[in-house]
Length: 159
Ligand code: DQA
Image 1 (tube, rainbow, N blue to C red):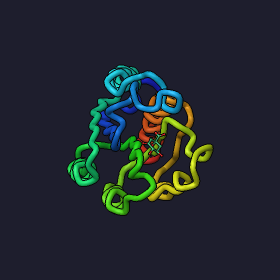
Image 2 (image 1 turned 30 degrees about the vertical axis):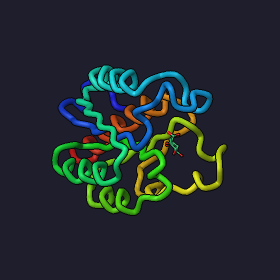
Image 3 (image 1 turned 135 degrees about the vertical axis):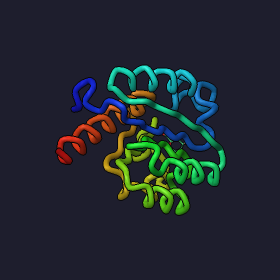
Image 4 (image 1 turned 90 degrees about the vertical axis):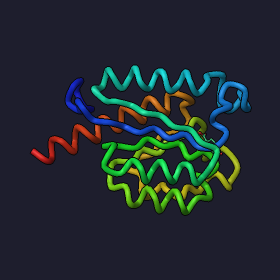
């Protein structure tokens, strides 16, 4: 794990897919009561602790997510993404991530393997450096820590 300051100056983009804007009200028995603004606030705070600047973006639109991934090129050093339902369907998000060329951590609040079979497939699983799921909001926080660790490792390798 990267020590504090090791990844100083690094920027991490966190993307949230469709319906995650309704966290807190949406199927709380699956997704819990924590809201997306609360998650984003904690991600920014944790980012400071890890020496990372964290920007978050949520959209219900596949195209808007693709646009944001494209715009991230050269601007961010790692991506943490919960593509939500697009995880299971989106070749467009996969293609955009393939062009990004930075560490990618896939996160999910729920353990998709405990749910319906159609949720078991992810179009980005093989592009991600790692996947974290099943821990509710902690999946995001663990995902950010994983991104910090990947950036620390990248930096050590490039010395
Ligand atoms: C999700 C799992 C997806 O299957 C679902 O469509 C979501 C949220 C999760 O975080 O557990 O919207 O990505």
